[in-house]
Length: 262
Ligand SMILES: O=C(O)CCC(=O)C(=O)O
Image 1: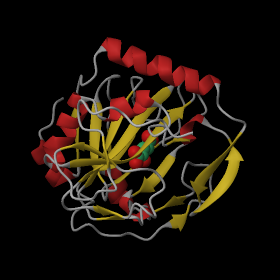
Image 2: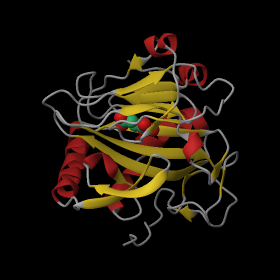
Image 3: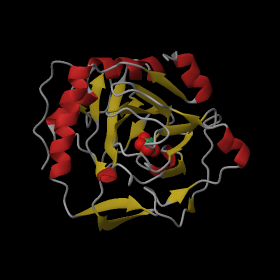
């Protein structure tokens, strides 16, 4: 399946297959495995609408890119950026990233949500998430699911507590009819999906005996989206094209990467 960006505008998501090759995905897995071995015991995460300390889980590997050049380099991979350019245009900033790993038989579900309503330092709707499959992903191991067209008009839907054991602790209320329209984005490792920051999406628990690892890289149109860098919790990087905010760190192709943050 190789969906054109016109589906993205209408439906709020699209898929590109075979973006990273087997060798590239193998390098990604080696890097990820090293991080998983060194998982701390406790982590501070944003859950139930607040920051809190919880037992560490591999679903919560947030913002690896400012600390590890490997992940920052991946965020400016030319084929990844080509896919982002196809939906956002040529001027691109990288605003966040998150490794979400669901262990076999144990991975947390992610309840239906919109991304944009969590990011108060980001003003504007031209924001997309690349969801890169590091492992093959299907319904049984908790693949991404999207409810097409729910981004239309960029509604800001209210959040309610899930009261359950899931990644965010919050969800938006979804009717059975909406839920039945959900699409499972089953993909081979190396493929990626792009989803609009207002489209409803989520995923089920991993009930299979296989790991489900993904890297989400979040980008915005540098011309139409403003990021308040004083409030934003990680640096913002210019990855392609032009931007007129001097606070963005320039990592366009051939620029050296900055020193990793500790
Ligand atoms: O990886 C998942 O299961 C959910 C990802 C997600 O919610 C996101 O990328 O915004």
